[in-house]
Length: 44
Image (cartoon, rainbow, N blue to C red):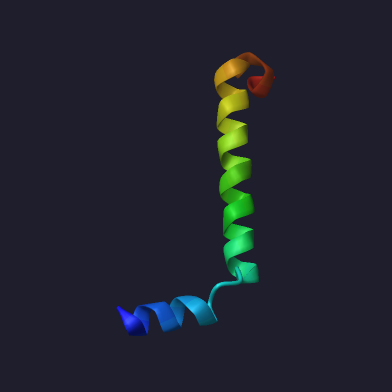
């Protein structure tokens, strides 16, 4: 448990890679929601 806490404390700030993955995931979710609401709009 102590080693996990030490590792967690040193990596508390999000890395640029995590931010990119998070933003990509968020964009994917928003696109899917938009596609569900207006499927015909995306096809045209």
